[in-house]
Image 1 (cartoon, rainbow, N blue to C red):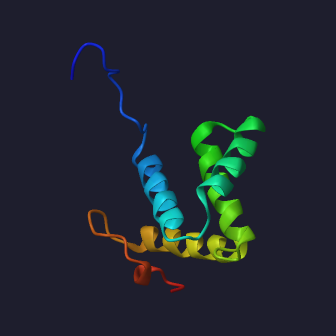
Image 2: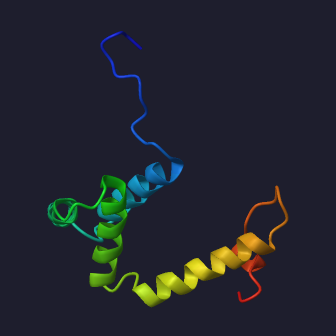
Length: 102
């Protein structure tokens, strides 16, 4: 790196990079268009939502509006992942089938 380049990573946490990657993959797959994405993200940021939170909220709203990932389904799946995390021994990969409710 030269002295003129900023000394910081583009993402502050791994989940931000993952969220970015998922968004790009969904757009590349044609689930939504980039113009739709930028309009929705801009509107969320204009509400004062912090940047990466706005990114997540925008993706959730777009997918729900398209019927791809409805909030009750997302909540149920998140709950199963949480159960799987609690049921998985430390140091082992978290597998959805480890959830008692799976």
